[in-house]
Image (cartoon, rainbow, N blue to C red; front, top):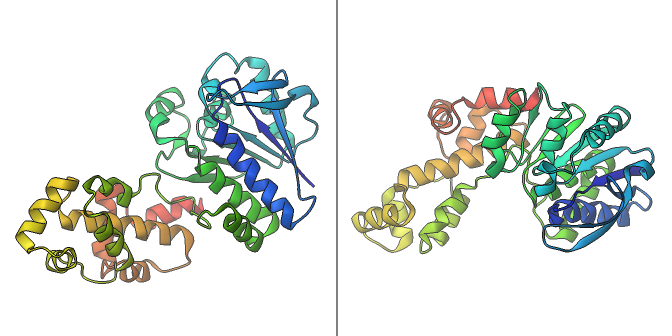
Length: 312
């Protein structure tokens, strides 16, 4: 049985804790006895989330031996709840646990404890500038869904905690159980850690009327997707389409398609054992050099460097 300690603080984000708890609970239906979930707080008792909803918790002193430590996020992670005694307990638990993990701003606790120094980590994109300023020794990758660096796993905000939990379940119980768990949760199985927090498609949804067109484009990235082809799919003249699309989304059609291709290519590089040339063909870049230039514009690094970084 895998004992999982989910740490909460006053003002914690409810879904940061409840999302992973739900995932582990469902996985336990398929493998009875796989997980023993313990909600923990410094003093134990009832702890209020930022929504006002409370959870009952055990104290750190009553936590017992843990296999996995999961620190939830929320305003409490940067407040008075994080005293030196708490940090000492986190450090001690990290030394004995198989894994130490965080959701959202729970990464602040791990960083404050010194556990992320020199390690790759992520947190909610909205906290990334503050986090990077406060913890310059951490190799922050602010647009990642989740990151594993050795025995430490960190994840982005809120629903990314479910992605993290599914990755942990896959490591413990296998991909089949993780997939069944995702199906029960009615979530995608499973967003790879390297997928950006920032979806190009979601950013483009500001255009409203072009949502369907962009969804169609994402499903047809292998096609040339010229302005002529896009305008035809949208039922507009080329000139009117280009002008209206740019005004509605803030992107030219060509730039929008490049963003979709870069996003799709990065996901494939992280989740599939494909050669860079094959990824370039699959996502419509045509050749690796064209994809390399697009990656440098988007990420400041070529695809090969990003793939090496994920494997490190």
